[in-house]
Image (cartoon, rainbow over all chains, first blue to last red; front, top):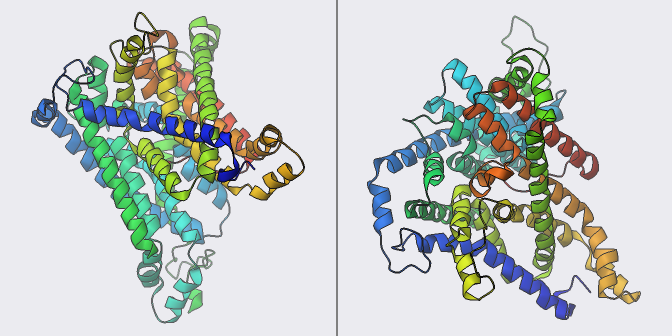
Length: 266
Length: 291
């Protein structure tokens, strides 16, 4: 009985062993970086000889780190708003429309998600050099929007597919305008999809490295670009401090998602 | 009133009345964005591969005729294949265990999978750069246990890339495989046992074949994602085992050779799309993986 946990015999121990090792493999590097960020060793010796907050201090006192984090944040927020709005409009069209090539259009909208990012990065870099958008906030926003939009469309169309349109029609029958019905009836019903669209869009932009490496200029760079260019030089513990803050943000977002999901269920 | 809701077809256009927005119109802003900033730039890049520096297929002849570049292609396939194989070997037992574990234990493993997936890629790669370096924890542990006398070169080579990429790809294989195994009816395995199959026979002749579509789809997905990876190979790999994405970046950034960059990008695109076509053909429109 291979699919019954209690009747696997000693195989059960093997499976549990492999799962434990894999879980440790996935978790330990993350904990390790968090621990090292408080270690005093410049050379990242583990276990650290002493504990310190020095790397956080260096991180937070360096305007280049702060500037890049602020740039990343601004870009990610603008991308999130645009991606959700555009995703909503597009998803309504795709979900409700009965036009020719609908499936092909849907596939086209999802392509940026599956193509190698480096190809898009190089292509946009060349294009933006020609039209003067390279190294600008607009350039960053456009390129991240192209990458984030598929996730937004995917989340919202999924939510729309699970929504019974006759409820919206009922609201219209009761006197609401079609637009009002969409805003006041459909939107609340698909809010979980809109929420995932926002989270995914934010993370796509905030964590994006490859396109950003090409878009960045000496005066405008995002946090991942700053981490990247620092890592190309040396493995300074300041990066461990930055990474730990990024991991903390991930945990916060995961908790937020869990809370919202729970709230939506009840 | 119902006629006021959008039916998608729209009324025939007549100049006298204002044309109502159809559903297709709603997709136009996103379509415009994609054509202007995705389709057009990629097409322009690919065009440069046959026009620069001189019109013709010279760039492709150079790319496919030089042993340096062929080694990079081979290396890209070797790394991706190795990562896929290792992910599959580890991922299958884990997905299997997850599918039958008590819920509470499984949800802890899931939380760790998600945490790892959502953690910034550079942070994860940095962790492995530190762990695997000559004076890193892993070498120290091996030295301390007396297993080795001198530190092993674990980073800036194939070992480093494989470990770092497997770390990133594991969730992408475990999650879809879990879904497939979860859907298998335990009664089938029970029937196998009743018919006298021992555990090995049940595994090899029942469970593995039933999980095969998920394994193949997940493996293909990981393989394709690995082919185009840039950041992790660039940081954990060495100069002697460069991958295709790094080559493209190098052509464009350091050598400013758009013709060769475009040609290499086309090779990567063609291979990626061909493998996706295989995926669609054999596994339907199954979307795998996460973000």
